[in-house]
Length: 147
Image (tube, rainbow, N blue to C red; front, side):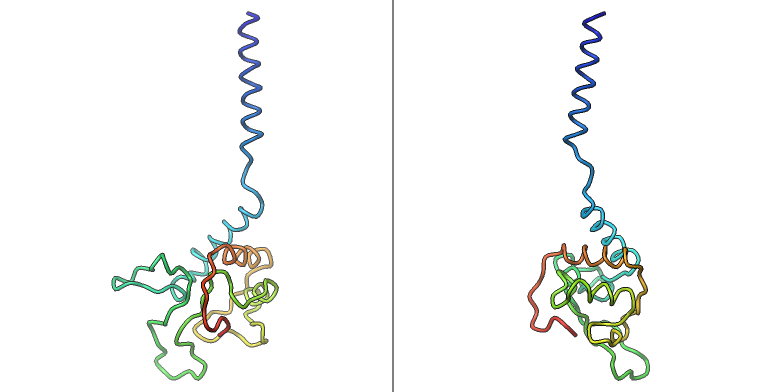
C-alpha cells in the first residue's frame, strides 16, 4: 500500500513538473495568432496584397508582399490604386500609425486609403493584434514602402 502511494505521489509530482515546464502560449503569441485570424479570415488582406498564380491561388512565398490589382473600376476613379503595398513587416509604418489606420481608415498623412482599400473600423485590441501579426512576418525590402 505504501509503495502504491509513493508511485501515485511520484506521478503527481512528475505531472506537476511537466505542466509547469510546458508553459501555455505567451500573450504576444496569442496576440499574433489573433492578428493572423483577423488578417486572413476577416480582412481577407491576401486577396489584394498577395500575388496570385495562374490558377488564382495566392503565392505563399510572396504572402502579403504587395501585388498589382487584377481588377479595375467600371468608371474612372482618380485615386484608384493599381497595385497594393507590401504589408509583410509593415515597412514604413510606425505601430501607432498602423493601429490608427486600422481603427479609423485614415493613414499617417490623415488621408483615407486609396480605393479599393476598405476603411476598416477595428477596435484597439484587434488593430494592435493585426499590427503584431504583420510585424511578425519577414519584412521584404521595397523601393517605396508608403503608397
